[in-house]
Every structure is written in structure tokens, then in C-alpha cells.
Image 1: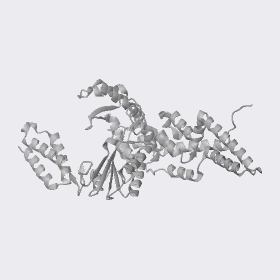
Image 2 (image 1 turned 60 degrees about the vertical axis):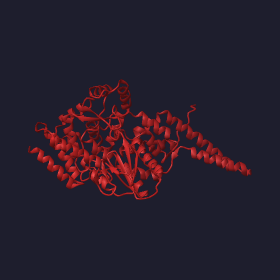
Image 3 (image 1 turned 90 degrees about the vertical axis):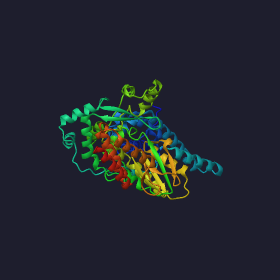
Image 4 (image 1 turned 180 degrees about the vertical axis):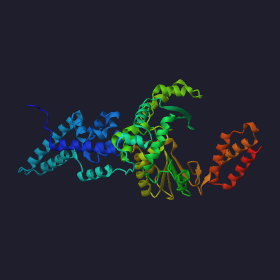
Amino acid sequence: MSDEPTIHPDIDALVEQVAAFLLTEHASGRSLTTQALVVRGEKHFAGCSALIVAARKEISLGEELRWSDIGVAVLAERMRKMPQFAALVLTHAVARDGEMELKAWLASESSDAEAREAARAELAMHAAELPRLKDAHAFARHQRAFTVKQPFSPNIESAADLARTLEISIEELDAAVRRAQPRRAYHLLIMQKSNGGIRVIEQPTDALRVLQRRVLRHILNAAALHPAAHGFVRRRSALTHAALHTGKRCVLRLDIADFFTSITAGRVHSAFLRLGLPPRVATILTALTTSAQEASILRAALRRDPTDYSRTFVSDWVRDSQETLCVPHLPQGAPSSPMLANWIAHRLDQRLTGLAVAWRMNFSRYADDLIFSTDEPNFNRVRFIGRVRDIVASEGWNLNERKTLVMPQSDRQRVTGIVVNQSLNLCRKDFDALKAAVHRYATAPTPLHDAAIRAQLLGRIAWLARFRPERAAKLSTKLFAAGLK
């Protein structure tokens, strides 16, 4: 006879529930990191963390894009073949046998009260260790809550429907997907950060950019974004973002590190599923809107840059980029990325808004910029930032701790470059820089008058007019007078 423990019906049903949980988490856009998935799984299941970790790690990214096609039964069958499932069965059998023996002993006529109390304590320990679904009703509510899809108006049920929506033929769509897959579909632009780091802008090819703009116009604009999102949102701007925090006793600014590149292709696929699109269509759109670079391409882009980077710096930076730029991710520079990022961050906005309300604070987000403000004289800043850090991490991002800034009203409070101490105003340093730029343009010889520079200055003056129209009028008059020379 085999010494392997018999799979109890309870544990066999449990693995089906775990499989359904994993698929639901992914479809809702919440299967972000293994750690976050385990934390959420522990709310519903006891003793199943190792199995959840194994299932999450074994399924590759390419296969993860087809999770919705796998189905609960297929995923559960794969999980039953894992060593962690065998360990789960053994744990269940040992705990169940011990529980049954103790119950039988307690049912005997033993009069030793101390022994019976010790047996009851051991029985409680066995019950706690028994792998099980913690709360069936709570889990059912969880399933219902995250399987409701966002209504989607366009009728896109197939690749042919998607091609018509994007105003191309099905053959052109297939060709576009093939061209988007190679890692040379994007041109890399290297930009220096103020802190000495590097920002990589991935600019799609012209044909791909056109398709991404159509995806944005015909599909992504249907997403209902959270009111806290102000970046790249119609009828919202840096002004509406800053206006929420005007005249507050304290303004707290936090920054999300690698906001775009931390969004993997799996999360992008889940975002399209939550918009109500079929899995096949979501997979095509994911291919069109995500990117993955190669280490050799990153190294070549740095060498083309005029900055003389040391060999050690290049080697270290390329190594650090393996976990972000070299895996399928949301590219910073694609026209579809900002709206996708806002839609993916919808739950993050919900949770941070709830936290802000509980602490009597205002909250808004402009891309990776998280702003909280309050009139409360004394609030535990360390504890609050810790809560924000935990929420951001559980949603798949990390805070850039070096950019965390607490701004009391006695200091200059800046939100996306706008001073908000008493009223919205442009920073004095920015105004002086604009004034100097206009003066250089106005006093330069006529041949140096460049149309692009003039258009840029007009845009900056128009931005100043939002805060100080009288100053903007003077600079505008000076600029136009220079153009008449």
C-alpha cells in the first residue's frame, strides 16, 4: 500500500478556491507582486502561502498574459502537481489525525482536569494549523467585488473588431503586433535627472505612435478615472492638483519610484480586461502598448549620449535596469502610457483617498507625485508616511524615499512647481528665469530670433498668466516688440 496521505475532499476543494483567487486577483489588476498577493491571500486562506508563492512564480509572464484562458480547473490541476501541494496535503492529514485523536480522548471518561485542559489547548493549535478557507462569506464577497467589469461602450469582441476600431485592416494589425514585439520598436532618449540619475524616454516609431494614439482615443478614454488623479486627465491639470492644497498648515509630498516602468505587461493586460475587453483583444493591445529593452541597446544609448559616463556607471545602471526596462513594461514616452497608468492606479487612488479622509487630509496625485495636505496642527508624520508606504508597496510600487518632503506653512510649499502657501503663484525663481529668457531673446540680434524659442517663451508666458496676468502682459509686450525689429 502507498504511504502517501489521501487527499481529503476539503483540501481538494481548497486548491480550487486558491486557483479561483489567483485568477480573480489577476483579472482585477491586483496580481502585482508575489509578496502583495500572499498578504491578500492570507486574509482568506490558512496554511496556503507556500502554494500561492509557488503558483505565482511558476507561471511565466508570457503565460500570465493568458491566465484568463487557463481557467480555474486547469490552474488547480497544475497546482496539484506542485511539491507545495503535497506538503499541504501532508500537513492537513497530520493536523486532522491529531485533531481526531484528541477529540476521541476528550470524549473518554478521563477525570484529569489538567490533562484535559492541555489537550484542549493542543486541539486549538491543531485547528489553527489546519489548512482551510478562513471565511467563506468574506471570500465570496471578495470574488464578487473584483469580477465586476467596467462597462465598455465600443463593441470589440475580436481582433477584427479591434482592427476596425483602430481604423486599419486585420493584416495591418497583425503586422503592427509583429513590429511591436522586437526590442527595437522604440528610440531611447536619455535625460539627466536633477539628482544625477537617468530617465529613459522610450519614443515609439511613427507607425506605432499613431496606433497608440488611436488606442487612447477609442478605448482608454472610456476608463472612469478616480477623482484624485489629475495628471494627463481631461479637464484636470497641475493647477487643479495644486489648488486642492492651497493655504494648508502642512503639505506632504511623496514620490513613486519608477512609476511607469514598474507597471508590467501583466498589469497592463489586466487593465484592458477590467475595461471589459476579451482576453485575445487585451493581449493584442498589451503588445501594442508595452515595451522591453535589451541590455545591449541600453548600453549603446548611453554611449551615444554626449555625457561622458564612466564604464562603471554604465555597467551598474544597465544591471539595475534588468528588472524594469528589460522586462515587458509600460514605456514612458508612449502616448497611451499616461492614461493606462492612471487606470491601473485607480485602486491606489481609492486607498490613499480613504487613508487621507481617515486622517482629515486632502489627497491628489499627478502621475507619480502624491500630495497630502492638512490643517491639523499635530499629526504623526512618521506613522502616516509608513501607512502610505505600505499601501503603495501592496499596489506594486515603491516610494522614492529621497523625494519625501514635509512642507509646513512657514516654508515655501510647492506642488508641481506651483507655490500654494496662500494662493496659487509661480515660484520666484521660475519667474526670474522666464524674465531673463525673454530679455535675452529681446536683446539678441535679429538673426538669432528663432521661431521655436519664441513659441516656447509664449507658452511659458501663458502659464505665468494663470497666476500673474499683469506680469505676463509686460513680458508678452516685450516679446512682441522684439519680433517687430
